[in-house]
Image (cartoon, rainbow, N blue to C red; front, side, top):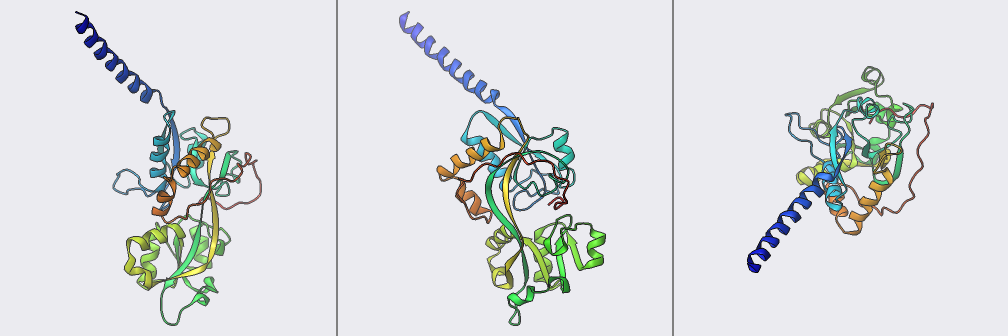
Length: 284
């Protein structure tokens, strides 16, 4: 009888432990993170499949490093992100900048320290008669760029009608299309995100010698975590989770896989940015 009771006690304890573990997972609070088409950070599947990219993989890593929150990706668009944020569809963004329209819209958000540095570079098809001087006068070239993005060479103007008035420009939907136009000789110069270019060349090593990459940037970007003030987890907390992943050696391989150079996550956290009436670059 005693043996029977012992076996029953073990079985019941096992069921309780399993139930408690399930409850722990179930008790995780969903935390929505917004994201939009911006390779290599987010790449939307035009066929309706799940999004991929560095942000998606970072969300998975954040979920693996703690058991308090369940970070969930919420798709939006560059133009709709402000409306979706204001409507409460998401509370956080990764690899974002206040200068990409948030300050101009008068939206106050908390910002973390810098988590990555990236930028836009000029590229051309390589040739014996081409060197860095090829990029001296971008405005005189036939240019390929991404529709809706903002570029310094265009004074951050992103209206396609105005851009076509000022430049001989082809506006396309993604970096891969820009690279293809350059390699086929359809344009003289393209403007691409450096990390996405590096990832492309990792996947297409035969093209590396065919692409001339400028040493100069159209613009550089220090990318951060942006968060809704007063909510948990804060942008600072997410920065801390990323720092934990870095200390575990799990962050550097992830960043490198997407063409980014890892950086120490030790910078001071920024105070909430006040609304600004000054003109700022529009959506990325």
